Length: 151
Image 1 (cartoon, rainbow, N blue to C red):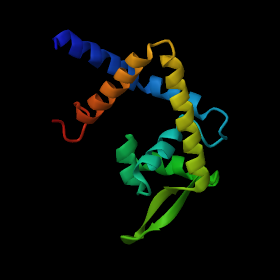
Image 2 (image 1 turned 60 degrees about the vertical axis):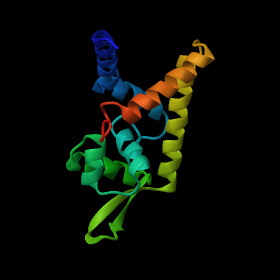
Image 3 (image 1 turned 90 degrees about the vertical axis):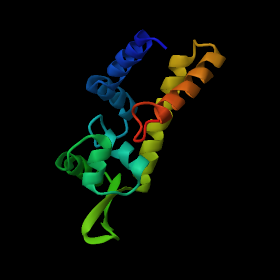
């Protein structure tokens, strides 16, 4: 593999990971799902769907936000009954954030939208190329430089 290939991938990832790219995607995924669900609160819902119940500090580390920002956005989601606070069984003084059944339904809707959007963008690709891309992307994500334990 040439340095150009690595640079091409790095450039593409740079575009993909830009805050504006994520905000645009999140706005599309959350459109019409209620006042509390938008590009700011989506990372909280999505992060909790990945981690399960956790503290605001732990969730902040997962989604790249500080604890105060997570707490403020969680307040919006709690008022909309998409998230609930529950006692931490390991520490009686602490609170965990958790998705409610409504929150799980909302995150399911966003994941279906994301999958449909990806399918639509790959519709013009030959099916075998799309499958190969998916396979190699998964491999890159699981084994590449972004893993906690790069091989």
